[in-house]
Structures are given as C-alpha cells and as structure tokens.
Image (cartoon, rainbow, N blue to C red; front, side, top):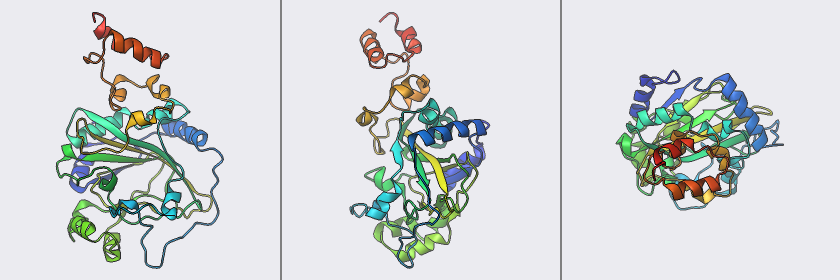
Length: 319
C-alpha cells in the first residue's frame, strides 16, 4: 500500500463495490491539473441558473446504459459536451494522471493482479447551466462488457473518478449505492428485467451515498455498482474530474477504448514523459519483452523521436 490509500479502502471496495478516498491527490498536483483543464477546455463559462430538464418524479435523465438499445437523447448528450479522451495538447500532469503510480497500485491491489491495463480515461469538465447533469441510477457494465459483471475481482474492473476542484453537493458529485444495499432488494436482477422502472429508481435513491469532497478526492467503484451523476446547482459553479478505468491484462470481456483508434491525438505527450510501467497500461510491452528487437526499436524511435528509449535498449543490445 502507499500513503494515499490503505488496506481498509481496498477491502471496502471489494465488499461494497465503492469507496471514497479523500485527499488522494495533493495540492501541488491539483494545481497543475487545473491549469491543464483550463487549457484543454478554454473559454467555457458557467451560468448563474441551473438547468432542470427532468419530468416530474424522475430521478435523473435516462442513459443509453439502460441496455435498451436506444440512442442517447439530446439532454443526455449535453452532459458529455466536455468529456474528452486522453491525451491532450497540454502538460504531462493531466496526460499521465490516469496512470499515476498510486492509481496503478490501487487497481492491482483491488483486482488481485500484478498486471493491469488502462481501458478508459477522460477529462470531464462540467459547468452550471450547460446541461442538466442529473442522471438516472445505472451500472457501467452496459458499455464496458457485452456480458455481465463477474463477482470475481480478477474478472471485474475498477473505475476511478478523481475531483480536481472542490465538489460540494451543489457541484454535481457522483452518488452511489453500496452493493449490500442494492442486493437487499435484488437491485441487479430488477434492473435487468425492468430497466425503465421508476419505482426501482426511487428505491435506489433511499440508499444513495454522496462522493462529495475537496479537490483531490477519489471515488473507486465497480461496473456493477449503481451510481448516478447529479446536477450542478451552484451559481457559476464548475467541476473538473478525471475518469480512469483498469482491468486485469488479458481480460478481453471488458473494454471501452481502443487506444490506437485515437492515433491522431498527441501521443508523444505521453511517450516522452511516461515510465515503462505507465506505458504498459496502454499495452506498450515492457523493456526486455520479445517484441523489442532492432527493427521495432528503430521504428518506434522514428515514430516518437523524443521518446527516451534507453530502458528499452539495454536488454536488447545483442538482438
């Protein structure tokens, strides 16, 4: 364990599927990330008045994750206006935060494996009045796997949401329901049988907990955990957050982002600053792997001219 999380945090995640860790990131790290957010999402302005587009009695706007095959509605799409995949044309602070060594260690411990892969990472900026950010309760497995979540941690995955601004109840914190609470009324089976069930939503709301906290707070949860985004109601309020999802290497049942599909993004920003262990999370073989030989080393150096490949060259000098 590191000084950022404890064995108790890991055990809570394994049992309940969710845990909040305050002050996971420190002030200096937070300041650098905020600077990058302002570069990536320039000129965004929050409003004084919050939007409310829900019908009477609704908990939140429905998501396509209800597994009904329906397309996103306009209201839902507005929530993701400032939801962007890494990497960005900014410093390494934001580009590498999703693979921070302590996040990798947390994922390894939670998933009971020494080898993990990052399969999703975004920066997400929300501003009061830009959308109605209230969501219905949902589980993320709908767009993370074509099957269903496993109870075996090694076959599941872990999602991190990290706040880089102070998040009160007026700043749209994520709300979640512990596994033990949702199991008390067969939450998962009921969800799969009746995906538009308003009574089910109301039942979940009785047990919801808030992940509100100061900048640097981390929420870790599984793809089988009911959760929802909440609306920003603070006048001129905003929320900067990063999502980071890990799975055990080789777990092909779970996925989201095919990193090479985003080849036109500034990947040199990551390669020039990441450690071999961080690059491994994106699927780049470690130094000494049979993949690396004279040909692959020379071609990789041509693709990323400023990448310091000294760690990769040493074990392959005789190839």
